[in-house]
Image (cartoon, rainbow, N blue to C red; front, side):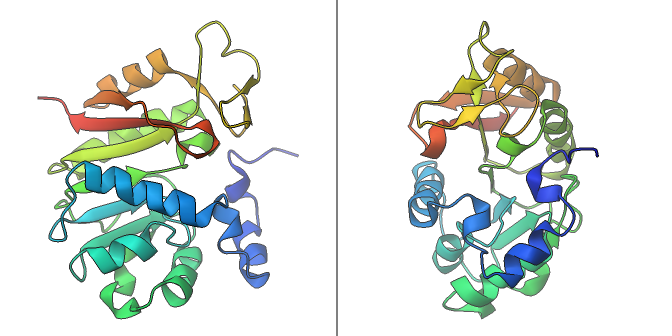
Length: 223
């Protein structure tokens, strides 16, 4: 039996989790901590209420439940492999769901961003590429570049491994064991930076400690 690229892409994964009321747990747990950190990252980078934000791999709106009340109505957009998961988050986690139009929640598992306006100011993909192979990250960065021409910042998290350790499992600073060939994946920083450059992005690593030892990269468009 062929293993899916990500556990989230296994047949029936979302249907089962939603039926069990596990919309928070399946996006990685540590709901309050992770949502708070995501919002801090964006606000530290200058996010204002009048900006437009794209939450890539939004899940059940762990960030959205904080960003939607902060942003002007209709300024939050989200993509995920499961629209049903995002809709559950909208219904359960938002105090004022009407601030987030349903058509701003877009099902997208290929990072083609169908229907996302090109006017986004900020975008974040937190805990997304940690569960996908490197080739998907490369493709996603290349696809997003022409679709998001007005971005101030694109934030991406990955797991990293030292050059001489990347071929074997690695225990990250927060205890998670990552792998070169199955999720959760780790990558070499040099490879990630090369993928960013090839996709049209400049990458700067942020040194703050993130849940599970993820590394944060701040991407801007190449001049």
